[in-house]
Length: 256
Length: 248
Image 1: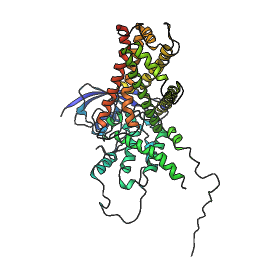
Image 2: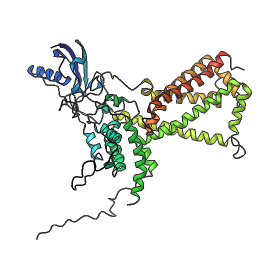
Image 3: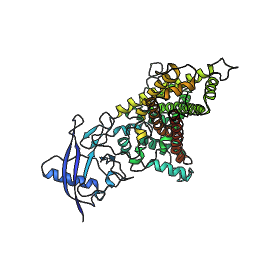
Image 4: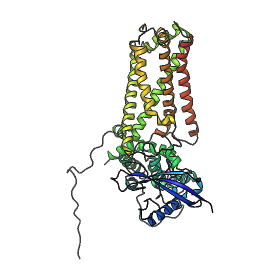
């Protein structure tokens, strides 16, 4: 078992109104097999036994599928590894004596709740506005009743891999949520089942997104930060559908 | 048997119906995605201009007669159909409109983006994909915009402290760019233009939704190639004047 000593600079903030500050914490004896979150658990156990307050951070499944963990680690969302969430980052990535700076996601739409935990509910507002297929509650149709070409199914699945962690917003210099919204729009808009509400969906979801987030300037930081490696090609698909939607939807409205 | 009746309020004619939407084009420009469309389309117009401008100016290597003749030709475009300079002015109005929309959309989006992160990161960001060109678009745009104002005063309107002759394009270029600081200004401004084009000419494909695995790899090459051609062409003029290739 290999152990390393690291120095953490952790963002501490009592609540949304508190200005917040960095705390420097020495963490000796970190097992390199620990995940990044387990290292934070270790720090918290030590803080609690010292009578201090534990660092608040988001975490849940710890296997990269739930999208709960976050953290800006040394200026990169979810840390330095490609295609991984913070829970999949291990301390073996770091060397003895490293200083690690940990900050929460920063966006006006993601206010800090406490320390490293932010409120990502604007994502729910976007999904509520159109990220669904209105269910026909008849009998369940046969599997494979609707033929879908394999490349289309694959592309939809790539978009559906989004776990709504918010790394795209955190990494974006403009705090734009275009990659998130594009993924949520595209995984339905690519499939036959999503066609009926395709244009209503893209207009509603983009308009909701723009109430909270910045605009895309095509830096491409989001797809590098994304733990699911979702491509910015989906943003292009969303842009195209959005323009069509504005014309199609206003034509539909004239029929009511 | 008990029955429950639900009375539905009559909503017709009580101001609760959906407010009439403005025309689709106005709706589009109100959104950020729509503003990016406008930036991309006006960007293509401006790219077309900057390319034609550079190619036209290459005529200066053919000598004063050819170059000045080209200037007169532009004023007499489509002359039997439209009066003299009308075609040129129609193109100029299109350019002015494109500039105005490009700048307004950029300003509005910048405001929106700054509001989207009022409290910034306190530690140093480590960018992976964002390059120098993409992160300095606002500044390279402002530099190019200010340069264009100077450029119009310098070679179209009044001249800037040399013997300016209206319509004598070759003479004016040679006289103005003969001054090393002015030549340096032209070179710096064109490098800023090159940076702006390096990101803009790639970015427009994404904004317009022109994405296809078949040509996506070529989008970056197109932007790099276009920026290079424009910069090399435009920078060759001040260098040619300084080297004495183009002189009075």
